[in-house]
Amino acid sequence: MNTKLLMTISALVMGMTGLALSFFTQEIAGGLGMNEASAIVLQVLGALYFGFAMLNWMAKANLIGGIYSRPVAIGNMAHFVIGALALAKLAVKDPSLSYIGAAALVYSVFAILFGYVFYTTPALSPKAN
Image (cartoon, rainbow, N blue to C red; front, side):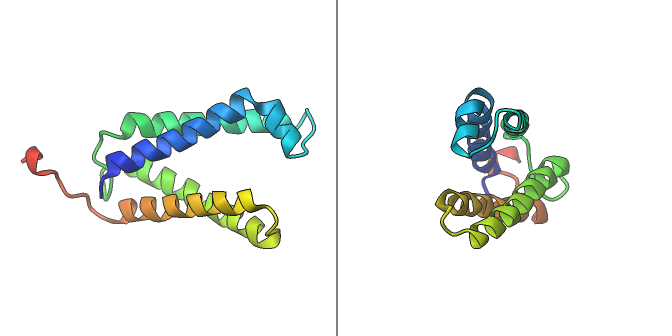
């Protein structure tokens, strides 16, 4: 599997989400019906997403899978598996929230891909030999 592509795409998705949550906190909170005081949680969440995006961006050139970069792989897998389960639970509970279903689908794809990366040994590229 091309882990560089996976790490790049996950970094871009989380980075854009993190920036949106960090800089458009009031607008997002208003759209979700949250009060101004609870919007700070979204801003902290944005910082978390952006930090994870930077981790993935910086690690994209590393060999990932099996025993290589195991903390990066397990961190991503845990994040996406737990997120996918939580989002899927809400999507099933309230099907009218179509954006939650879409987010659950994206999280599920990332969870499966990072699970595959975590549980398989990466193949060295031919030019590395």
